[in-house]
Image (tube, rainbow, N blue to C red; front, side, top):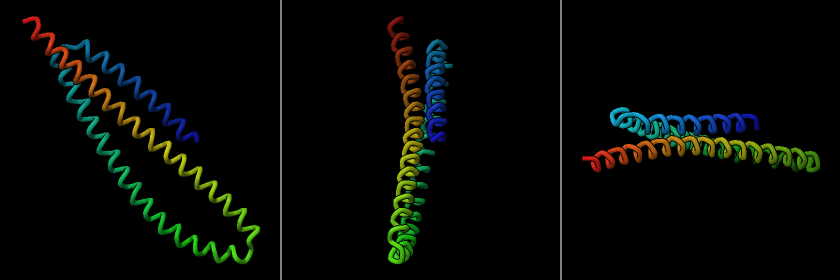
Length: 141
């Protein structure tokens, strides 16, 4: 679990950094604000692309793992027939371990998704600030 709690701390830090960037960018001139929007958009796209690649890799990994689980399951069934009592306890322990690993993996995926959402929120907020700056400039003309 320490891996996911560490990642949550990183996510919290990332959210604070995004908030600081937005507050700083809003106080900048239009050119710098526009540059910040461009950079935030690029970073957001890169993060989304990485997240998509990670998801694809995890799907492929899961498929390979599933095939391996099928083979191992057949071997396991044969051994269970010889010693049901001991094997049941072992299977329950493995199932609990798999459930814990799945839950931990899901937590890490959710953290990655939240990180991408923070970057998208940063981009959207900077883009809104740029649009407001442009609108205010038109009002003062």
